[in-house]
Length: 499
Length: 122
Image (cartoon, rainbow over all chains, first blue to last red; front, top):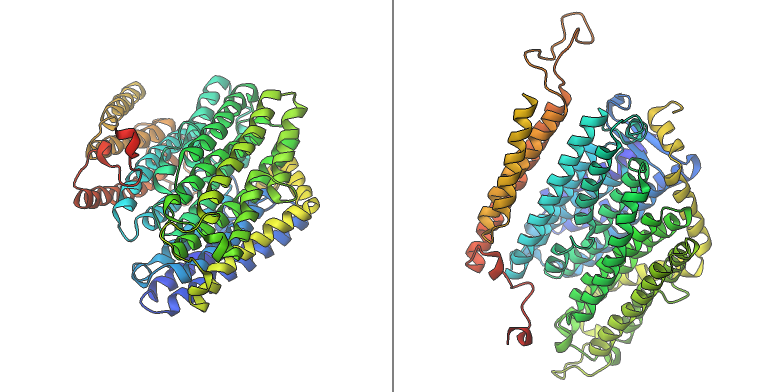
């Protein structure tokens, strides 16, 4: 059982080493593709085991919990690893056509694989300090990917991304230190029990807020999101897409994990703060998007607005709210990465991501236009696409608690999302190209066209499948939410005893 | 001793915040260095201080006898120092490269990625 849990971390790390050794050779990129396919297989195998047993755990080097490092996969962790592998595969395939050889020689594929290993590690670890380590691995590889190539925009965005994320990391580390000080343990399952013994509950709430701030920066919550719109539109599209899909969601995942497993002692206080942060995040994100005039910058602000929905689900702290949060998390990763891919293809054939300087995509590349509409409508919450169910569950959860205002805001934000999607449509797809260019997909060489379009088609299909057959996915999210709210299974599996 | 360390951490954090509020990215970086050291001391302190009792295990035993210092926070601090060192080295290199590229270390003048709109400037 322990191999199943180690594989999703080990495979990308090994692939990274191999890809780095072959970085001057075309074989390097195919090693990267093969490694990611292997990661997908390994994560599906792990998922099958989780579906059978509920929660699985492995003690590294046989050091029994709570003393050693534990890897755990419950429903949420497992689905996040699977979705990481899917997004990773899409990115690697897309990068075959987009990343120039110059960047491959600098070790692009190795950095990408390390990033995936770190993200999987963060989803699977059952130890708080280990989570910190995976965050750091993720940060350093994302720093590398972000500034790889070293254009002025990248360096400028990189400075803001790096500095603000480092502050959040130190905040996280201090939080870990203080939590260890009051409980004497770092194993998350053990912490679940230990925090109940703490006499000074006020101190615990203070620590909880430190974690909220630290993960809030990672997840790009209001008012801590400023690094995101400053940097996400600067790197190559493949990098933007995987960042947009995965990185902020690791922050959201960490928040869901800690605020259901560890910090549920004063829900009235911590989750109330979260609720208002979520509402403000939704609103500022979507207003920011409305003010932008660049394909990728609009999408960057939309990430922020969507993060608000996920945190809203956590803040409501009802079974239905968490179902919504989990469902939203999975749906959003697929849709958002896909939109960035579409933006990348638009840039490739029309020459820019600046909405004032492109056009004619509907007339000359109708397939791309159609493939843009699927994730765009899904993001806005049109039935029968995945985003509709995600929003429906969340709004219903808010209405069940009679939070009319919150439910109203989340619906209004959905409407504004359509507004900025219409803006993209109205500038990039509908009118003729301002320079009279004919942006045709057919002008891209066949091999590259395949590598560019396959990820987009695949992810769009997934969006449709989730949207048309939501039943099994909602059921999955329900079980996952039940596991989050009642941690007995998680704790028993990790510690090996009844709490 | 705890009080002294706690005060030191407080002063370090205060200096760090002061430095990080500066527009000069180099000064921000110095602030970050102080802050990460404050965090390390914080972990060390939260493991409780035990003077003059190294956590050594006598021959033939599996656990130390009597009261010994807590070794875990020291291991954590060691990890955090190594990671922090790597990240700061990267950041320093990034700032230097940015200075060579953009010709400034003033964060207000770094507007390449997010250019101020023409209308707003007028």
